[in-house]
Image 1 (cartoon, rainbow, N blue to C red):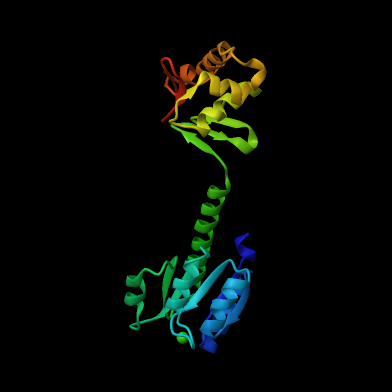
Image 2: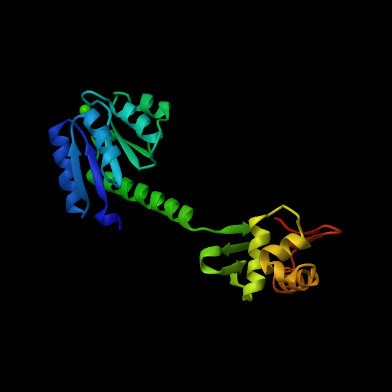
Length: 229
Ligand code: CA
């Protein structure tokens, strides 16, 4: 994926922009270039790039301002390109939210390594955020896949057991009464028959708490049940 990533080169020095473009395209990246700061900011907002290489000194809007404004609305990876002795310390000190900084002049190998590293970390983070899951101690519940693992081991649950567990986990730390659980998981047909809740709690406990020797589901006497870390 990273090899076909589109890199936006924001650099007003023609030779450097060209050098970057050639180096990146040779490695299979797609590129776009822009030399005007204000225009670059507008394009980052409008177009779809995977990473921005951002020079600091630019006409109309400097790279620091661009970075600051982009960060207000986007987490697109940004690598700042700063001239030696110029304002590298200042740029870093300002903590504008850039993912990385490179001082010019630099070798293309180093830049490529930084780009790959930055893209990889970014993609991993995005992937983690996209996976919908609940975590309780060593247990992970993936609601989209009807999957439950404890210490990495798959737990086989019946549909009702799974629904009960999910309801407890969605309300982690909140004590749920037997009536609440009954209505939510079994519906009104079972109204009043809270024994079924106790029975299914005991099923879950034998498959999770007892099997792994750790307490997940707690009984709140006279009230109901709660799952917590
Ligand atoms: Ca410049």
